[in-house]
Image (cartoon, rainbow, N blue to C red; front, side, top):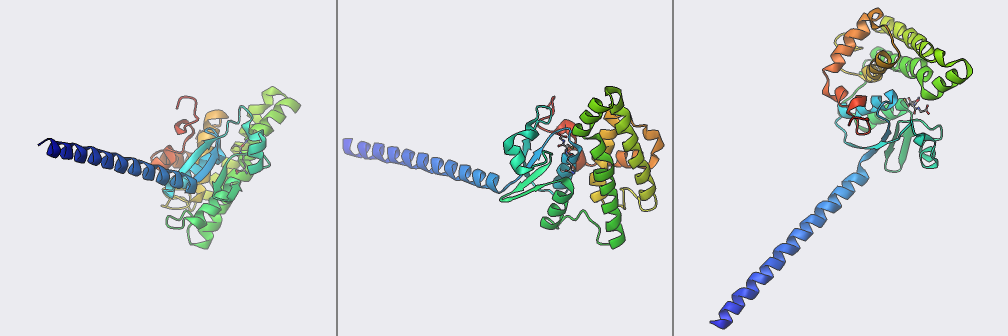
Length: 252
Ligand SMILES: N[C@@H](CCC(=O)N[C@@H](CS)C(=O)NCC(=O)O)C(=O)O
């Protein structure tokens, strides 16, 4: 009797140990999997209010690509840290890290993503439409955003005067918006170059959000861009990429 109860006791102890080991093993496996997943995941160095970073957040969302968000606080000057300058010597966000591959500049990052994740294309196959997308994207990233960049605004403030900051940015944004309004008029449908969301939208949308809110741009002058902005506000992939929804946004 005593022997059989001892046997039952030992059996139950060993099965508890077995269950515990199994549980620990599963936990370790899940941890290793999560680690591996994180190591393989794209890393996006971004700042919540950066319109250039926002373009890439939108592209990644549209392509359903998960990524790790690494905040770089531009107000604290983290873009000038030696670690960040190793990734991007000019000290700007966004930077995308894909394993050993490091890419800075939103245009280059966009093109990389377009080739790496072609399943959800953001460039039309029609050559003329594709060229229109490149033009619209480039107006934003070469002829608008650089004039409102923090470094440039600081320079204007110091060399020309603090009151010139906003009018300077507003002038360049409106000049660019006038060009976009004309360039996109014929081809625009629901979105900038047709009924599908494309590269032009990914570059134009953050500029509309940013330009209208911070630089006192009179959007009444731009009916097409205003209409596009409304269409963008209905896209969850765009809404999720907006500054206020980023983990480093002040209220987040
Ligand atoms: N051509 C670059 C421009 C990048 C850029 O200007 N990034 C801004 C934020 S939108 C920045 O990091 N500014 C920091 C600074 O001026 O110190 C791109 O498209 O990625």
